[in-house]
Image (tube, rainbow, N blue to C red; front, side, top):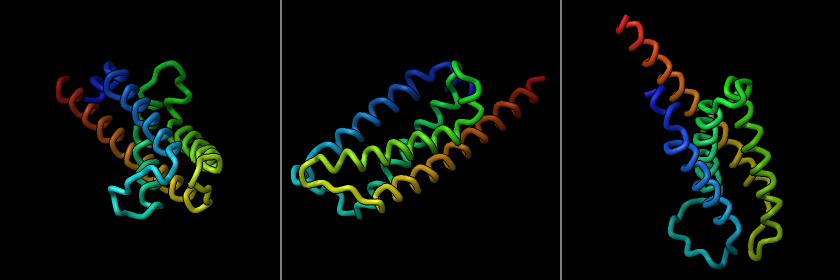
Length: 140
């Protein structure tokens, strides 16, 4: 599975990341009064889940990319930095969107979602590596 993800990274990881990130941006750009609140959950939970998904997709993409080995080896740090900065910029951007506001607690929810997403990604990648190395040893 590890090699399959690596070989098909664009289809399986990069395109979903781009679509997800664009959807996240559009969702935060639409004025709040244009939303029918379909999910009756807390705003902070939405922030948490939104950035959890972003962090998982970004971390997997950074780990499996081959252009910058240093980034691939340190995908956790880069994911934390990128998602945290994007969350802060998104909160600033929402100041200019009608009926939206910028809140530190929203950014904090984004950050905790990012940390959780990075943890999930780390767990997934470590399991994929274990399975890959276990399979390689069985084949020898």
